[in-house]
Length: 494
Image (cartoon, rainbow, N blue to C red; front, side, top):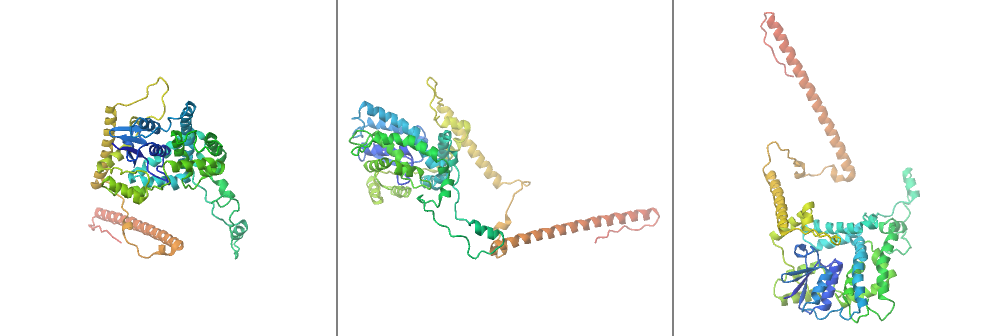
């Protein structure tokens, strides 16, 4: 049976937007026989044991996480060789230590670079997810991953990155601004804006550079980058003949894992590329190593989400799929992602809603915190999971049904707001003359409101006079009746 490696889809010219997914693809490409495995760009994490990717499927068996996948593949018959079998005991210890080191030091750097930084998230990371996910999951998965990244980096004290960049467009010089405020006509206009001569790439000047949140916290960012990159650079060494991290003729598991993190630091085209600039300028050997490892494993193909969508349209034999991959220039064995049914989409929406509820979230999503030794982790039973999921689905269906019923069957006393003017076509008007026309229209509306108010006051006064006339006439008639003169009361209506 063909092994299926489920990953978050491609982004930034890489096989995945997740570092461990890239590492898993690199390891599989390095060790598995051709034709024995495929890569599936997926988004349904409900089948994964840890509700995240990468996840390896072998029939009914699912394995999640980079390290468990490596351990599983080392025992599988599809594996041609074990890349770590020739390592010494010290090198095996280094592999274990650096794997933990990367999750502790490299992952926060990626969190800050791709998620916490508002400029990079809204202009690069979020659009990358938009190309990968169905429309309804864009409201849940990217924000959830960003919140998780914020939580992992909260202790670093770099929340200043989570703001929008400052607009540094050219402004008037002080002399021209003073003349304008004094009412003096400036024939020459403001002084021409001159591009800064400082070598800050795309930035327009020193003020823009220093006003950006990345540079306001640059000392902390440099310290974090040094803590992560200096040990890797030291492990790589200064020997020009040493092309890999360890003394091995071919890439090892550690090389695949390091590739996953360094490639996401180097290759994404981000508005604020402080991390990539740091690696290229201060750690050039790591940049060269990353490019070399990329060529040895995942290749330099620029896989796009649109290519995978085109591949999904080729429903047919494996030969047809292979031909489609070749025509699209895909080197990795990308396979068709299963198309979700209507029931599956509805279940995904219910799952997204259920995981946002406090109590249900604890039951459905595994606790990422490692329990203390001797303390049994909380694992809910299947009955509780089924009951809570059914309850969440019933609540969601009930709310939607009630909202639809109320909309279709309003009560007579309900207040319904309708914008009748929005449906009516408008022809001409002051609004066609720009801001000045809008101001004239607002003045006209104000005059209309004042005229309406005067009409209502006049109408109220007339009604008061009418009531007074009726009372006077009736009173006169009553007095005349007492005097023996039978006069008929009249009502005078003005």
